[in-house]
Length: 297
Image (tube, rainbow, N blue to C red):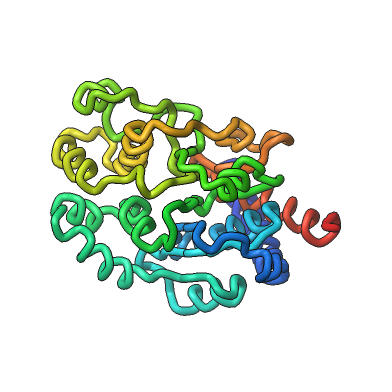
């Protein structure tokens, strides 16, 4: 008896949050175009037909709390309909919406000499995060946000990195390690010290840290023995950052949490777990609505 009631309440609450999120996305005001400080620093998100609404909130919250415009790229995994694309372009004027077809064409040429990389990209959409985004980034450094990362305060560390010309690699530190194979196997094979608890949901990335050659060798070595292939993309980024070995984890105020309520001191929250979108749509739009429309100066 209780399970259907719980399911119904979850549906009602998440629907209300989704509607409020739509309101925030529709009527929020982006910083003016003259606040586009550095067009060479691009911000990238990967979305699907199920996550693009959250992706809009992620992009809006990021621009609102950084108080500047960014060179935004939203990559879609091939499932986005024309109506959703038009909606994104209306809410975020000037955004670059990169279709799966555009990505396929560009990556095919770039990975012509890396057949294992190309094959894996075709098999799992999350590989678009690793292979497509660097190719579309116009400058030598870029920022990646997962669609389930929302901002709640000014991210000074990200702004400092963008403005400084810093070639360090920063990442969101997870509560536990999630690599496609055990840490010990990676370290033994590559002779590196793998950065701990790497999560690819929020990253500040210098292109120079990435290598298709290393990615090809890594995938070729571990493609048949990976325990968790869904974490290949995250593991590849962790490997690249560890080999580059310049940078560190962002402070814990860039929160990854499994609980219901975020830490009140958090700058950003990466929502994880089976019910992450339920919690995101309950917590995020309500806070952003009051912050943007009632508390904004």
